[in-house]
Length: 323
Image (tube, rainbow, N blue to C red; front, side, top):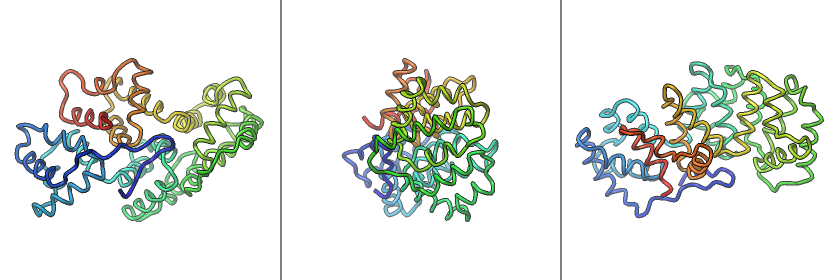
């Protein structure tokens, strides 16, 4: 495996066993020839293999049939089904690079997405994504953020992009000092004192930050999220809450995002697809547990609906990949 997306205490889903890329390639070739009649085989195979396994299947398919599996398949699909399949056939670091590009240059300048991605990946992942970003777009990620990103947290984002986050052992003495420094900086000053957060959020380990958040609550009697809710407003409030919630409990953060995307008056398929595809091999089992705990509903059922379309069936397969 070339890219192992291990995030803090969460572990990547195991490879599907038994795995035979030749058998899968043959079955997928037959599935392509019968698309529209029955898509179950396509959904079953693509939805029950890891990103690395799908890569190996594509390589095997090319050697067996002298055709690009991706090109042959995608031209026969449409709509959300095509979108999900296209993303599944893309290396995850490349997908993250494209998401970052969209967050900076796309309609609406999705700053929350920018923060979400950079605050839920490791140093090694950031470095690899930066390489892909520059290769694909002819510009470094840092240059894009510096020159084209309107975020008020631009400096923090640039620091995070250095990929120099401490990944060592947590020091409880430093935890106490950081929590006190954050408190002494003064909640009333947060609107103007970005420096109070920059170094802490950009360089300290996620484990360290969670200890700091707990220590802050012990000192002040309220959570950092509660303090941000009451003492800040506008974009600063939204950005800080995104960062804190991503670090504090990543699965809960994504469970809330999934709930909002599924329960919106018009379902937000873009967010639904993005979260399921990007997290299915990282921490989906934890996200599902948080979703069930918080919203008293099985995530698979929420996605599936009464008469599921093919893309929904494929998303459900990805959500249950850990099984």
